[in-house]
Amino acid sequence: MDDAKMVHQANQIAAYFEAYPQARAREGVLDHLHKFWPPDKRARLAAYLAGNGGGLHPLAAWAAAQLEAPAGQD
Image (cartoon, rainbow, N blue to C red; front, side, top):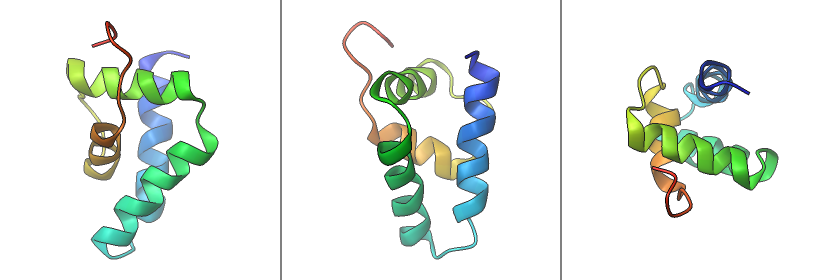
């Protein structure tokens, strides 16, 4: 999967949760990533944010910041 598709998917999740109060929206996005994205995809999103993070919805960027990229993938 290329970065553009990953960002699009993360942004779709964030857009779904943005109608909720901020704390619940953040929890929802992060929970979704943990439940439905495999560890390598979560790590890739974290590394993308660490690299430039361009185009990420603010909720998706917040959630990505909570994820950890494996050493050497930033």
